[in-house]
Image (cartoon, rainbow, N blue to C red):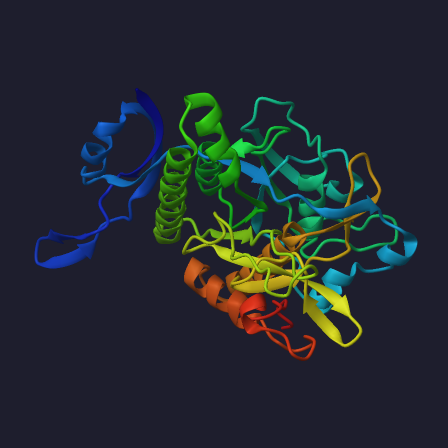
Length: 389
């Protein structure tokens, strides 16, 4: 029986030094090339042995990292400046993201929302649903990154962003790793400097599909799902590596996941979920406000690289107005917004590349302001901060 596979190939020149007369010159780094093939399972080893193949993985279902406690924002929650914008010190930064291209891979966007007035939105739909956001999640995340002021409330970390790429990769039934990797490639090709993703692999859903559709017994379905899980982690790692090595400076930021349950049992901590766990992607944990400082959210997965505000975050809602949501999905766009500010800062004084952007972003993170007794493994390097000069 044939299986559908995502094949990541190294397109263009090979990433190795080549001899050019009397000197060595570095060849152009290979561009990622994504292909979908249907092959017999026994043919997979032959494909992976090809020199131009970087990774092979089955498409796995991807799901929204669903927000918690979503509701219309109250005046007290909104205020003049959303608390997350203040926490990352974007409100005191002289930078606003001008000249930086950001990408949001999510449920789409409400393009008519006043928060996005004046922003050039390049949209592409990777689902089989309508082009606009039908959930509100993507609209909320986009608002946190680059949203303009709504009423009297500032919601955007980088409200000076003038061009944004919006990839609708999640619909009512979720999405797949096939559409996500294709969307990342699309974003890079269209000049994205920062990509924000608040989504995760649906491992239980894939195992269930193998049982119910293919008739696999439970043990075999679990084994194949684990195999697919590992292959997809490697797929995202190899893709991120190729993006980092490419000519377009693009940083990928992803939410760590909401599966932990510290409020039920302090030991109930789940590790960062894919694709955020993949090497080369900045994973983000969620912080909330406490009486003695910022603390990790009960739901936030552990082992992330950095942290961002992720509890009771106010941003754009479907149809206009403001909405409050909680989740690492809300923390991720804060970090993406701060990355845009650092990208602008770096670009003003020299060439922008992924290495210096990553260094500045992670280097900005700090434990200052965190509640006493926090576990560093829960918050990574700490809460990211915007450049102040």
